[in-house]
Length: 84
Image 1 (spheres, rainbow, N blue to C red):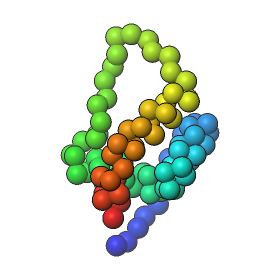
Image 2 (cartoon, rainbow, N blue to C red):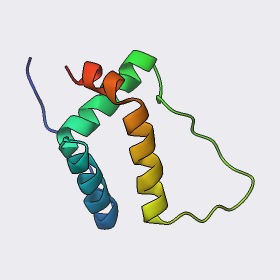
Image 3 (cartoon, helix red, strand yellow):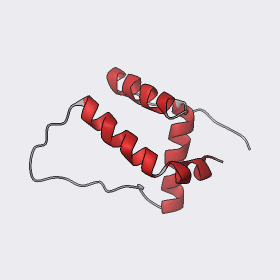
């Protein structure tokens, strides 16, 4: 399969936090993004709910990472299948 490059600009702290999370899960950034893209194509949309809330929610990076790890661990088998 031929590959191509994808260049994106994101917040530096977000990138570091994501790299740490993915590393803990045995993934690199490229693999994690590939899993997301394969999931989106298979789902034919964004593979999670995106909505505008009517209230302001303040969440720190640690809480976001904890929730992300929990969701990924719950769906780890599906991610591994999609990564193949």
